[in-house]
Length: 86
Image (cartoon, rainbow, N blue to C red; front, side):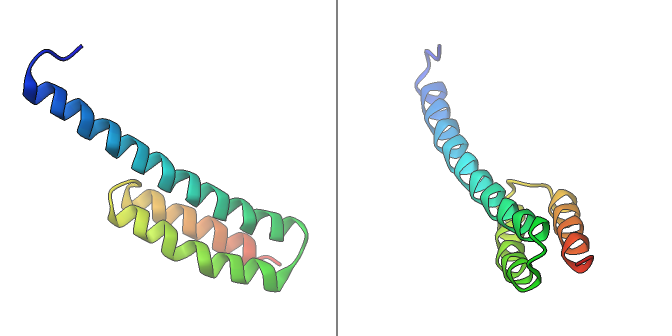
């Protein structure tokens, strides 16, 4: 438990950031699942549309530091390969 005023503030800031990061990660996961579902159903147009909507979301998360840039690139690359395989 924090006892100094600055440590208490740091805890509050960390909690806010944690909630924000979790929210963005959940949003990315939901969009990725939509792409994967479209790929499973062999819905080419749906998969392309879902992929087009998920790429900017992943890039934005990487720019905010929620994902490392290489992790974001890897996610986008793998999703693109799956969609292109249709």
